[in-house]
Length: 407
Image 1 (spheres, rainbow, N blue to C red):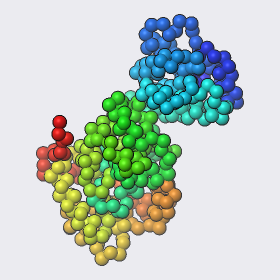
Image 2 (tube, helix red, strand yellow):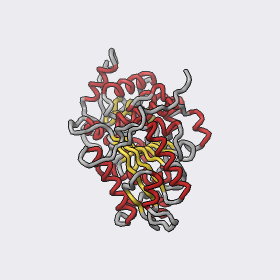
Image 3 (tube, helix red, strand yellow):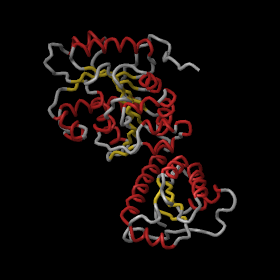
Image 4 (cartoon, one colour):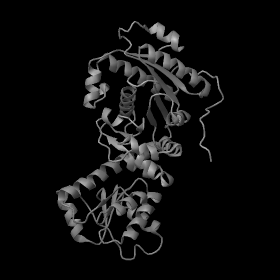
């Protein structure tokens, strides 16, 4: 049986799909039985799923309501199977299909190139999803690590650290790493990873009330290094509709779905960052060697000691550690009140890699900056396995005191 199953009576569509894939799809491709749709849709779904296909195309020839009902049943009964609906696409139909858990709506009259491209995209995504689900059910998997990168000032390299950390973790856990851009107004994770997202955080927020772990993945952008990104909105205007509850819902679902979640935040401690802190197992506290950033980092550390969780691991990272600013590492440590765990030196390769959208750990793995980021990666991985000495957050408070929205 092919990895693709066509649930339709339409023989011509089967011929179109075979032609689009140039004979690459072997075995039975189409399955239909008279009376299959009578009764509970879950029974029809289980019958179709017995083929072992990664992707099931519903139609053409199915009424829209029937196709949507089957898509919802697949989402509930067999979330590892990708579903596409073959029908005339429209904005309402696509929205209804995505809400039902389908991956796409494909026109039955699509060209061979369009048909192959759309189905191949879903086949690839469904293969990753099946692998991720299989891996998450392995008994050796541990609780998700949530690594939040914080810096009180912009321009210190927060997104650079977050994107490199995510790429490095994806090498160890392909398909099980997500990076979230919580700098909702001006985030540039998409640029740092050279992504062109079809969906952003604002799209996920619009459906937050009906969002679940499977439907959330529709809004994630896949990176070639086998990680997923939830990118910031395209326009700061779109942020107005994102509530604290939306952020909470999205982060909770991501934590349930991935082994590692890396969160890039805006400067300071805004509402989204405070929500991220509530989920975090690790805090990467970033500073550069200029006096304003160091003083602001000192204030941030004092705030985190009050509102922080004593079980969290802290990693103090000093970026541009060898910059000739008149402020040495010892002075930074004394002012901030923390020893530096990882010192990242200046590197000409860093801005070049950022401009090209290739994290430096891939762009120039031998660069001193890459080696330093590798040390941070090792700390996070070791802490996750419970095998390395770790510095937990100083205990000066009794849990987070995020201001709750008035009810």
